[in-house]
Amino acid sequence: MFNGPLMRRTLRDYSGLWTALALLVFGFAILFMYAIHATPIGQQGGEFLKMPFVRRVLTVMLGSDPLVMLTPSSLSSFAFTHPLIWSLLVVFALTMSSGVLAGEVDRGTMDLLGSLPMSRAAIYNSLATMTILMGLPLCWLVWLGVWAGKNIAGAADVRMEVLVRVAWHLCATYTLIASFSTAISAGCNRRGIAVAIAFFLIFYAFVLNMLRAMWPALDRLAWSDFLNYYQTFVIVRDETYRWKDIGVLLSAAAAWWVAGLIVFTRRDVPAR
Image (tube, rainbow, N blue to C red; front, side):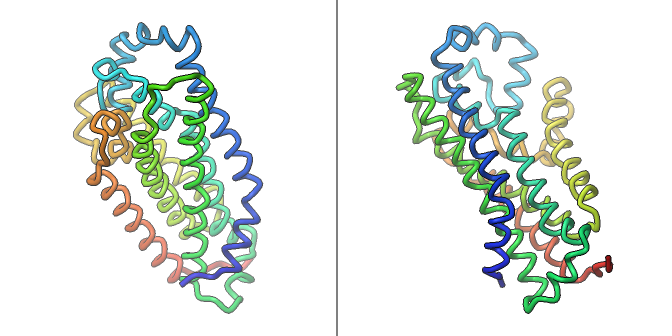
C-alpha cells in the first residue's frame, strides 16, 4: 500500500536538502581520494597507521588490521566509513525521518494528512520508502566520488569493482538507520524527541565501536552494534559480499519497519 502523490510531495519537500548533501558527499569523496593518493601527506600516512592506538581503532572500525592489508583499494574503502560521510548520511536520515511523521504531528498537519483518502499504512509505507530511496543514491555518490577522485589522482591500482561491494553494504547499513529512525518518528509527537532517540541509538553504536578499540572486553556486545556488520576492509580483503552481514542489517531494518507500521496504524494522533 503506497500513495504516489504523497511520495512525490515528499520528494519535492526534501530535494533541496538532498541536493546540498549530495554535493558534499561527492565533493568530499573526491578530495579524500586526492589526499591519500596524490599528496605527500597521504603517501606518508603509513607511519601514522603504525601507532598502536590508531592501529587498534582502525582495526575495529574497518574490521581488519590496516597494516596487514594496506593496498590502494583498502585505503580507498575508508572513504565509505569516514566520520564526515557518516555525519552527512545520518543528518539526512534523521532530518527526513523525523520530518515526515513526527514533524507532521508536531506541526498539527497530521490530521489533515490523515483525512485524505488513504490508509495510515499507505502513509507510513510511502514516507518510509521515500526516506530509504532518497538516501540510497547518497551512498552511491560516495562510490562515484571515489571513482572520480581515483581518475583525478591517477590511482590506477584502486579496484572499483571491489568497492562496488562496499557500496552495497553501505546501502544496507543506511537502510537500517532510515528504518529505525522512521519507526521511532512514527511513535513520537515531537520532532525533537524523535531525533534525540534515533540519534542516541546511532551514538551508542559509534561509541561502542570506539570503546571496543580501548576495551576488548566489550567485544561481547558487538552484536548490538550495527557497525559490526559493516566492515569495509574485510569486504575488500575477501573480494566478496558478506551476505550474512547484509542479511542481519536488512532483517533488522525489516523488523523496525514492521514495528513502526504497527505503532503508527494503532496510535492516537493528538489534535493540535
